Length: 260
Ligand SMILES: C[S@@+](CC[C@H](N)C(=O)[O-])C[C@H]1O[C@@H](n2cnc3c(N)ncnc32)[C@H](O)[C@@H]1O
Image (cartoon, rainbow, N blue to C red; front, side, top):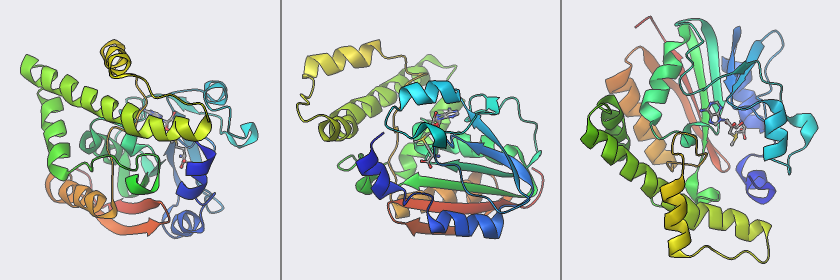
């Protein structure tokens, strides 16, 4: 994670994030992957932080971040699954710059809306690929995301499993060749990009269940397509309230209206 990119990406606790939080976020809920940048919430709102790594691990992982800003994690859990969180238990769920880290965003949106009470708010932001270190990557289409969702739903079948592995390897290859090159060449003046053979060896050795990369890329248009598909075809109890561009990111607010 880079200061140069992140300064551009997130106008440090941006006014827009805070403004939308004041308008929509109430009651008790969760923030996934808050890391060093928890959403500033209105008085009286109570939040628990979810991350799959502890504060101590994040401090080691991101030495460039100011330690004092990194939140203490309340639930050490996979925030894409939320197994420990009961259905319809939360007034809100916040996930800023997290959705791009999953290989199956449609399923994750489903898992997130599962834990919302009727009236609950899903507050998400994602980086715009062309505005961050993903610049130059191909744009993920809605068809690609639907295909991911369907493949994971039949992942017990060997053909589906093989296709998932292929797709994830393609994402990792693109991440190494474009995103990581942008990150490391910015960080180290003497950065030397790995050879084709080195990259392929690394991809073969990677533990795909635990890699932390941006699997997918978003633009304002493609992210809106994802939300439209989700609300029309996957969870009709959820509706879009607001989708705006905020510098190098897109912020969306959705509301759950009733129980599934
Ligand atoms: C790019 S940081 C986002 C930081 C901050 N929310 C922001 O707006 O910049 C991604 C965070 O999500 C967490 N994360 C990624 N995948 C996760 C998962 N499956 N479950 C829980 N946390 C996850 C990471 O550990 C990290 O803290």
